[in-house]
Image (cartoon, rainbow, N blue to C red; front, side, top):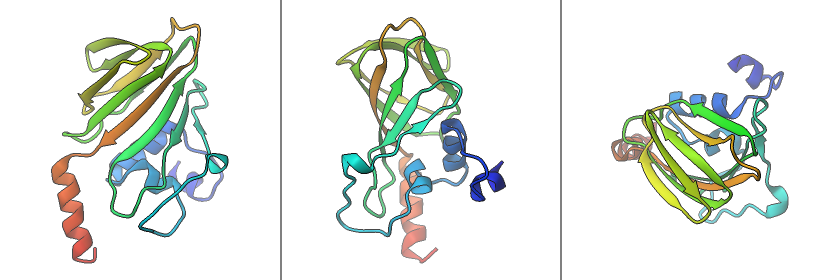
Length: 166
């Protein structure tokens, strides 16, 4: 599958990209961006490219490019009505997800824990268990803003590797 993606023979799903970013220990945005590092990064609305999950129609929009060295992912995620997005694989231990529900209503599942969110609600969780967004009862799309914060030890380890030129 990876060689098919590298050759552009197949387009990866959001789940595949998330798994690759975990395996490579890098933010998803690093996998999909192609620009050189800069101190100020701007992405115009007209340049945005949604990643669409083929099985569910869920859409992911990374609010990137980030400045060089940033390990935080900042994204918008839209779950269509009558759709279950996930379960997504567990992130590395210590990874935290912050979620703000812009519109709609849905259930967030983290392992065996379930929380109901309505527009304007937010939550934070350790995302080191399988997790997902359930809008199967929804009549409208659920739009979320998500910030994925990597484990702190991982961030400092990467910084030390970068300083040593690795």
